[in-house]
Length: 296
Image 1 (tube, rainbow, N blue to C red):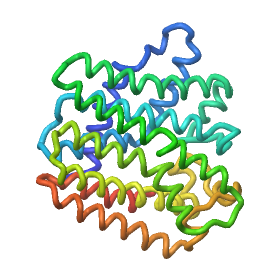
Image 2 (image 1 turned 45 degrees about the horizontal axis):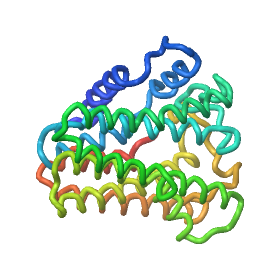
Image 3 (image 1 turned 120 degrees about the horizontal axis):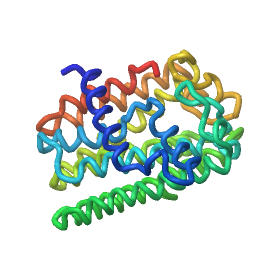
């Protein structure tokens, strides 16, 4: 299987569905719609929705009903978090994916509202899927619960709050793990669980998807930490070294570069071991390797 071709094909598929489901760019007032489209269609990897689709396929071999809505909802949540993370009151980033961040292009107020809108529309998309087919509503309701938990104080919001609270401080490994598992790992774990739920996974399969997502989330964030130290700014599309400048606690800062690479590889290997428990694990295996080998 050629992972690059798979990612490209799935990325185009998700982009097409996002165009269909998001507010039209020309609707009034134009600024908020323009900011939403600028954020969402800026060349992201679509890793989280692709993970959701790939997990479902690994269990049932095809895309189940509701997969489109769930994938797009996950991507909306991810982009909302990026818009808010970049704000001056958060990470104060001016560049993302090689372009100005949303607040830099449209102003802080519009950026806050664009993030809020994407958070809201994510659950609107899930609700629309549930009303489209009553038989599907129970699974999309469970997906809504998963997404709400992963997005809120028990997930991304909690991780971001802990990250901000500990900037410039010396912390122990348990606090760093908490930040990474919640700020980044929670939504990746959620995407895998949503895919399993829509595929009607049994309890064992759901636990496999959960453990796979947890390990993949940690591998992904450690790799991100490393890229902020050793990456190529042109390929990353954002500043290198910004974590150190802001006093952020990262794996390279606490463990060093080599140990961080070892830890990322260990989590990726654990994700691969979990994926092999499913009937069609090939894409999930390749994705686990991709997250630690990527250079962007």
